[in-house]
Length: 440
Length: 81
Image 1 (cartoon, rainbow over the protein chains, first blue to last red):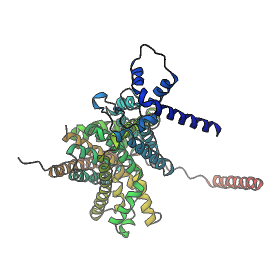
Image 2: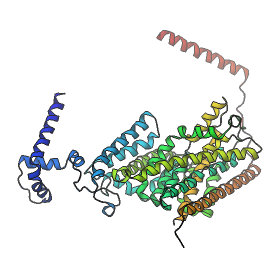
Image 3: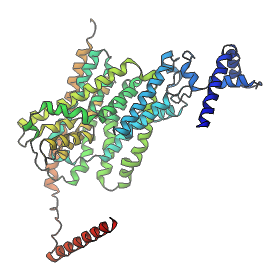
């Protein structure tokens, strides 16, 4: 306790000292700092002042110190920060970061991603350190794997290695539900344009409706790199909010009888089918949409390695150590875009709103499509599984299963919902390819 | 040649995008169904071997073992409390 008091009184003394001498000594101090080669003797006051110049407190409270923003792309993208950006902006961002910590730790919202992203955001808002600049840690990470879209692909590889296409192969028709849910992307694209975003930015934002983190980052980086931070944060927060956002929409669009529909037992899937499936997907995307092959190729590779059954070591690395390592880098790199000068813009608010819209529209369309399929299909289809068409794997499938078993205990929809769920991953990658092909 | 209506552009994107996504998944479904048929025809799976039902005395043995374990656990818990 005493130590703390001493420290605080020292700090106050320092502040008082400098504010007295600040006006007179300011010019001298800047001269001293610019002259590096010859060391000139300094009085203790000068030393104090020059130290004060480098403290974060001064950097935050001195609003027009002409500090430069930091950008991984280097000086061409940097600008002198406005008074708001270098003072209150930072404080607001740090509070936002703490909120994200709270959501991740106390509420369990996608902690694996929100913690690295939020911490990256905290580091990016440190004054004077320029951690998000080309030589800073975050900037280096960003340039290493996000600017060139490498990390999202590695994540996709890991997701591929974790995905079991068995449920989809057992009931292939449910793949169409994963397509319907992509309406979230294109519907909100129209909404975003109506709100005044230009077509390219709107496309980057609306991909949030695909409910797929890596795809969102991949597309945002290509189409609207300045909005990457807000888009990634929106995508991951809404994915975390799947259990909150989806059930009301699912209930609103279905009747009680429909929710109680029981689905039959799935057939056994031959091992060869699973082995050939990633190749089929890749072949199709090669023929139809080579633009999407970076995503689908990485995904298919991961899945093929898993299903081949002879490279367990590799597939194990992809689904564990590799994806974990990349997640750390991806999170920190994305966090670098949470700097006040990039995140605290009006667009971020629009992105949050459109993201929510996109997510809801995707869920709704999936459910509606499942209702239609239920009308025409021989085997009953529970419309709830349509909601799993958004590709948040496996969260939305779990939500569907939970809602289903609440309506009728013992009705397990999990495996049936996994079909549209994994199809949603393919669907959103295809949708991403379409968007890329438009802006080629 | 007046100003471009971007909302209409976005609607066109929507038609194209949803069309391609559905087309892609539709072809995928068809190919997968065909594949399932072909594989079922040419590589019939050996009938899944249900684990042989253990003989009567084995289950009895098993029952006894379970009983012994339960007894041990209860004993242990009683002692603890």
